[in-house]
Each structure stands twice: as structure tokens, then as C-alpha cells.
Length: 165
Image (cartoon, rainbow, N blue to C red; front, side, top):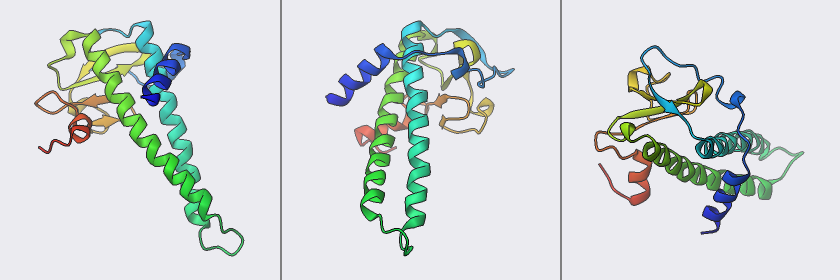
């Protein structure tokens, strides 16, 4: 429960800026359905900041892995700690983004039965298809989108619930 309390506190205190989503250009095949409300902009900012923090941990983890076994550095404890933080960070990000996308779908009911949604420049919420995601994926960091299967459940939710398709 502590993670949920901390997440709510982060959302309350987040300060989103238009720069955060400026790189997510609207694609010709996107269908805009609205502008993200302020509370979801704060939530989106938390998701994007969490992704940035996790990227920093990736770099440190790679550095620690490269150092193992060198005579100058024997920092196995630090590597284990970074690996632990990295693993927890991935789980936290997965849950945070799953809740975020669920909230976006609730705020924009027209997106509930659509396979993909994304946040674009100027906080536009758009309906997308896999073919117009920049990399045809199910959860994209390059264009901050999520794709759902035909049952309209994200694969992350299915994994969390232990349901195999």
C-alpha cells in the first residue's frame, strides 16, 4: 500500500510542462479525442519522470556490470543494490503506467473499445493503431502510447493477474 500512497503524493505534487510531450508529434492517422485533463497531465508527468529515473538506473547497472571482475573495482554489493532498485523500478513503472492508461480510458470513454491510445504534443489524447505507433509495439516509450489486445486488456494487466493467453 505504501507505493500507492507515494504514487498519489507524487501525482499531487507533479508539475507537468508542455516540453514533456513536445516530442510526441501528432501522426496523420491519429484520431484526436481530447486534451488530457490537468490531473492526468500530472499523472503523465510522473510516468515520464519515472521512465527517466529508470533509464538512469539502466546506465548505472550497465556500469556496475562492466566493473565486475576488474582488479580496480570489486563493488558487487553496489551492483546488487542497483539491480534490486532496477527490478523494483520496472515493476513500479509497469503498475503506474497500467493505472495511468486505465484512467485515461475512463476519462475518454470513446477510447475504451479501441486497441491503442497515445499522448501527443500539446497533451492531445489520440486513438492509434499498431501500424501508426512509431515501432508497432504494445507499449512504446518513443511516442508514449499503449496498445491493447482484442480483449481490451493490456498484456501487463494479464501478466499481473497471472492470466495466460
